[in-house]
Amino acid sequence: MTSTSTAFRVLSAAGLLSFGAAAAQAAPVTPDVIFGSGNANGGYTVATGSYEPFVITQVDTISSASTNVTPSFDTNLEIGLRAKLRFDEFNQPRNIFNQSGSTYTFDAGAAPGGFGFDANSPTTPVWNFEWSVTTDLDRDMPISGVTSLSALTYELRIDGDSGIGVNFAKFDPIRIAQADHALGNLLTGNGDGVVSRSAAEYQANLAKYSVAQNSWNYEFFNEPTDGAFLPELAAFDPSEDGTYRIEFEAFFDGKSVASTGIDVVVGNGASPVPSPVPVPAALPLLAAALGGLGAIRRRKRA
View 1 (cartoon, rainbow, N blue to C red):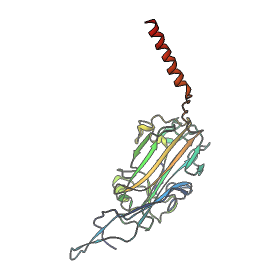
View 2: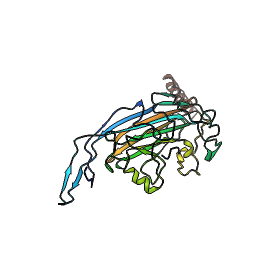
View 3: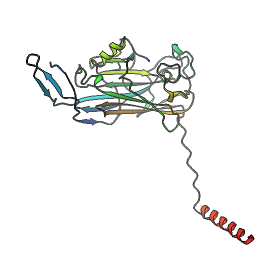
């Protein structure tokens, strides 16, 4: 998984007040691409949503009196997906997205070398998919545990079926014990995301930051020896023409805030399902008539 290393007291938060979502569109993500180095912004299929996620309980430290404060503003969220050429003919990453709307197209075939940890693997495609979420577009620093990454849940859906249908592996890529995601906020610059060094640091950072991003390859998930093996991807073959659906969604209090999805077309894409050949209307009648003649013959012989 590719990344770089790099005035009130909130005591409780509860109570969803409202939601709003906008249609996905091709765009850069906010604040920038913060993982790796040399990664251009743009080419994402982006969706936004808004939510009023909390009632804040403020406690006076002297009198211990508590007061519920309901903010009068929405919190805006952004979520994005894209696919990118990870391995060119020299086995190098390129800022090439081959995008048409929410569809991304790449050659079939295994990478010419692939990752060092699994060199020359026949199951490494030449493309990566990249995801991004920003849970608070309104504040340079999110409210810890309220509009930070830890305040929401997420679902990433990765398709392992090369055909017209889908076979989704589903999981939360952020609310896990530890990951090498690039984390940041609205002030984080290109390639400057923070990567947590331990599980404890990662959990603390989820409550501190509002941006999470990563760049992933199907190679990370398609073999039983992978640490994050997904059985739905076990039959994945990068040399096979196919179409793969990938979706990413963010939830607050169990309700969807924003969702986006892309299609990755490999080679010529998925083959269409053959349409059944229609039977002329007269044929069933003819078959019935012939069946009737057979019955008549049997009766005559009897």
